[in-house]
Image: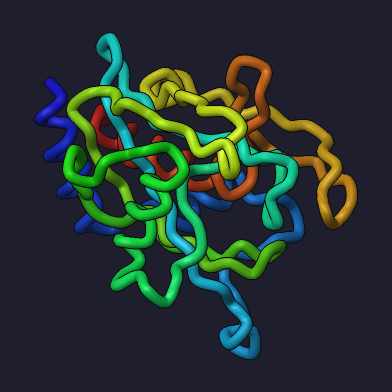
Length: 209
């Protein structure tokens, strides 16, 4: 069952992705997905790891709640990842390094399938490269308390079968915004994390068409 999904995802990442359309569904109002040319020198490069794995016949991915002490996006729900450092040989290696540092994911026990669509996060001036990876079973997570307040398992299969998108008012760095989000056990999954999930969900929906 899962080998077919894994193969499908790997092949899908080589084709045309639903990036802009999927991202735009969850994009906060007034924000944009691309940086202007004059901003290029100030754009910070980052990457995240979107790891999917089966639990009881459903596919999940792992998210983290960031501590309120973090410099960027404090208290928000995000994928493991962060800034690409000078010592990182590639964006993919940065995502794997950060995932290991934050939640203890062992890169030798997962398969990187490819890359989802990049986008620009205007509020923090980060360009985000999401890498999609596969694990045959739920990893043994080890949380770094300095970077992760809580591990959140997001049931991707549930949202592929019934994609629930709600709206709410949130207080953000730029003031109050009405944003779209994925509801999960009382938590609000919005912003960049929701945009990445939106693309993953759209790709998986196409397998069922």
